[in-house]
Image (cartoon, rainbow, N blue to C red; front, side, top):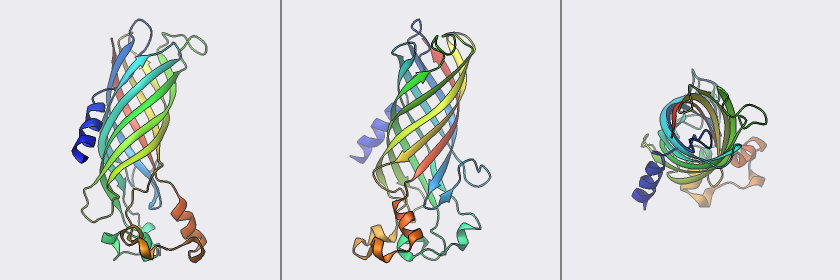
Length: 240
């Protein structure tokens, strides 16, 4: 089953939508990205000197109308968070640390390989209402869902391995070199909605997991917090 999920996600990663207009209704897009984490461990959004892991992605797009495209795609790259000096000073209850990081004061670190398959609907502002359909600069926004497989490359039992569903969204800007070729930047966000990506002692031993009435306010907040990721991507696209 694990190999089937990996194969499906990797197959999706060979596709990506970037359809430009009704003349060239299908497009492919490939690129690289930097990925950052925001969750219980800390926040590395826009902090490139602290934690930013690289990866590659590809998308395939189909023209639906002058305002909308359908998009499927995928990515593969490292995902996680590296502790800062301030993080290492945090006093965290043992149940909130991972089994491989119990010798540290903070919660520890996260390092995994993430393979993702995504589907989304894109709204194009170069649609004749806001900008001309053939505008050189073509901004857009999108929203969709993702299936993400996380593996533990740290080998410290700090990754909740397996399949994680996410809600994805973002915005981007393409520069159309001509009707067929374009380059672009995309800022994407994902929110894991089914389970936490960081594996803790409480997950290892559910019978010892703390309840809300026994936890401090900060720990309750930590327990309910969702894991997020951000991708800064540079792309090259071809429409046909």
